Structure formats: structure tokens, C-alpha cells
Image (cartoon, rainbow, N blue to C red):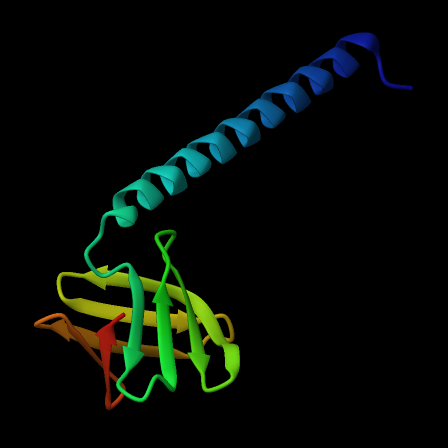
Length: 116
């Protein structure tokens, strides 16, 4: 049988651990909110399409993207990062790609996408 002082110590340790976990989640959520606010006004957030409208990249303000191909509205989804005029993609399967923005045109994987 566990003595009362040990039970109290274990209970206190559990409370401290829970508080630490909640604090970490709160900080992470705040960081995500700040990033979304920053990206909302980012010049590259929005829809980018090929001239034939077959490929469509929607760059969301939360750092996620959705790529549509033809009639497949969610052909690929994942994260993106913009550094200057360069964009890196990582889809949810782990595939990576990149591109560059020049004169309000996105050059990506041999494709040319324009803002819609």
C-alpha cells in the first residue's frame, strides 16, 4: 500500500505535468494563430491556376495547400512554406516539390500558374 505522503507527491506531480502540457498546447495554438494572421495578408496566399485551368493550387493562410487537377478537386493536399519568392511543398503522403514566384507568376514543376 502506498503511503499518503507518496500519493500526495504523485498527485502533485500529475497536476504539474498536466499544467505543463496545457501550457505547451496553449503556446503552440498561439503560434499557429499568429502565423495564420501573418499569412492572411501574404501576397502569395490565394488561388493559382494554369492557363487551361487544369491545375489549381489554393495556398491557404494556415500554411496548407489544396491542389486540384481536372475534376479532382482535392488531388493533393499538404503544407507549404514561402521563403522570399521560393515555395516548398510537402504533401500529406510525404512527396515534396518546390517552385518560384516571378512577376506574379508561379513556376512549379514545369508548370506556369497565374493568380486567379
